[in-house]
Each structure stands twice: as C-alpha cells, then as structure tokens.
Length: 129
Image 1 (cartoon, rainbow, N blue to C red):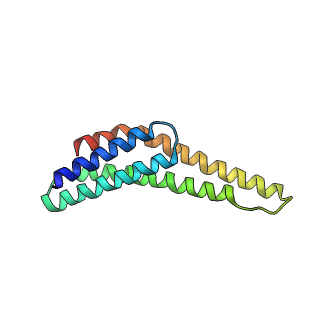
Image 2: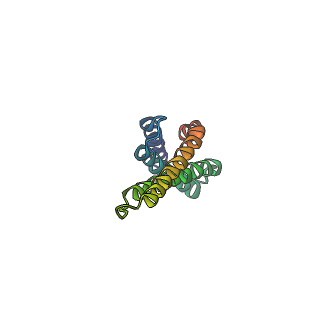
Image 3: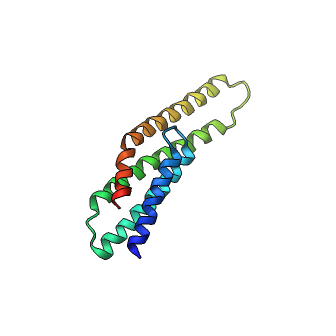
C-alpha cells in the first residue's frame, strides 16, 4: 500500500511539473509545491515505517518545497501591495507602491529561475520514488 501511495504521489509531482511548464505561473507553481509536499510526507512515512533510505530525496524535496513556498509568499505579497488603496494625489506613495510590487515580482521571478535550474532534480526524485 505504501509503495502504491509513493507511485501515486510521484506521478502527481510529474503531472504538476508538466502542467506548470517553464513560464512563470504562480498558481501552477503552487500546485507543484503541494504535490512536492505530499510526496515528501509519503517518503517520510516510508522512512519511518519501512526504514527506506530516502534521506537525500527528502532533503531535495524540502529544498524545492521551500523555494516554491517563497515564490508563493512573494506572489501573494505582491498582489496585496498592488491592491492597496492609496490617497488621491499621493504620487510619491503610489510610485513607491509600484516599485515595491515590481521588486517583489522580480525576486519571485529570480526564485522561479532557481527552481527551473533544479526542475530536473525534482523530476529525478519523483522517478526514483
């Protein structure tokens, strides 16, 4: 049953990665994060119950999950900054808001580029699992 669950979770990661593609798409990346987390939990269960030697795989998934979580957090913060109401006639404040939102988006995209550099590693872990 555990092996079946691992295959299912690993297939979920592969599907989510394929659906996300390589373009910056925050919602699709969030789905990759969720699928990665579920696979990690299943591997932790395999380690704890069956003594499976999966420590390196768990570490790799944790790293990817953390990066994808940062992308999600940055995206949510950017959306909130853009949605903030500013008093009329406050051009300087509005310019600051725009600059902050653009900086958040830039960092999010940089994190996405780093994720893409590790994308093959994530797929390798999913195949191995």
